[in-house]
Length: 573
Image (spheres, rainbow, N blue to C red):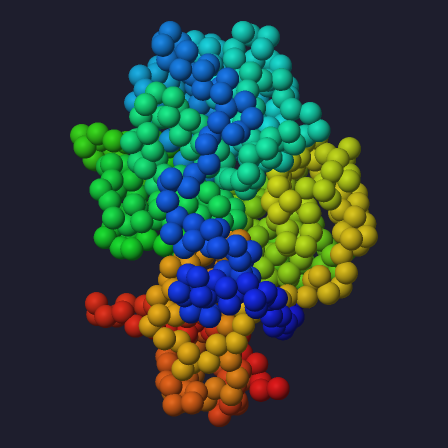
């Protein structure tokens, strides 16, 4: 099974709304069109998108249960009751833990944190963790990035006299856990306008509420830059409050100054002194933070990001080095499992011929199967479930396409599993090993009932036509202003026709193609990443070829210049 050629599909745009934005905002037609395509045709929404501000954040007290949660926390601080933050082992959960713990410490709380270890403690808020915290004298537990389906843990906490506040962003069950407060914008009875916050976004709203109630609003910006890391790593839609957090946070991460822990992390990532963007977070920094929870203990990452005292410089350097080492180990494990999984898809008809890929391996490292599932989705353009079997029990990670609701698929056969939960696009499960074949059949029956063959054909979404001569300094500057790019705000992709290749293609690092393009007298350099297999096709059409591309600014010897990042080539039609 190989990846089919990309279908170029142009996104629809309300031309009248685009013309109004162009006139009212004094932006180029290109930018006005992009704003409309992203659902920002209304003037005020477009203005907030282009110039986000912390003043644009909604009141945190619009979230259901926020007021009683804040009162309980401030009461605990006043009475010096011990408070515990219960986090999760990914970047979203670690950054959530860090910002809430730091805020409570600044407010004078007696606070500890607990982040479960993936292999020892399992996922989410468990009764065993409540026991552990209760034994440590904790009287209030606050979950971050987890807990929305933890009814058993909530009942257990109540039986011990421990108050529980749940903050989460995952999809709730039909009924909420019986906790003192449940803060989640996805609650069916919550009218909060921004439903797509990451777990760290919900934690930030709690911090914002605590700052407001205690008269410490000046503290908020310091928490936003850590929240930006979790928000970008969790691949939530970068609009609304997520964009405010990501855009402003990246600016603060780039500008500094930082506490010793964050400084050490940026240093080991090679990002010190650089202008940090969403790519750096998603592909350089976040994998190192994630590696702690995947390969050993997430507390390495939490301790590093909590390190604030300059006297901890040596410890912070060692912790950052540990993250780097664990990430290298993660890469090795991941490559081996990806190779085995791809072989199973290519050689086993029961696996490779179905709409949803369901593949399992004995002893596959549970810390990396989620990444493996993502890579299978990318390679085969199909939803994927990757399971690690350990005797009679299998643990699985699921990743999906935008057109397929993976959580609904799991719910359709929920009785097969011991446990499952997550989002429409990413989920996890536990199942008896003997039932994996039945899971494969049932999930695929669900998929075959709601997906059409066209849904599984990979598409390249085009934002419109753009001639090389139209890429002005204004257009380039405005495209940069639309960043950070990611889910909900993808990097714009344009098309143009009849382009001549006047230099190249030249193979770079055996994987990429570098060349220069000419159209109507304008020459621009460009690169096609991981496109070495297209070299002969490009060379054969060097006199006239169609391009799908993005415009990027790069730096060489201190000079900034524009180049094209080529997403695809096509013979002229």
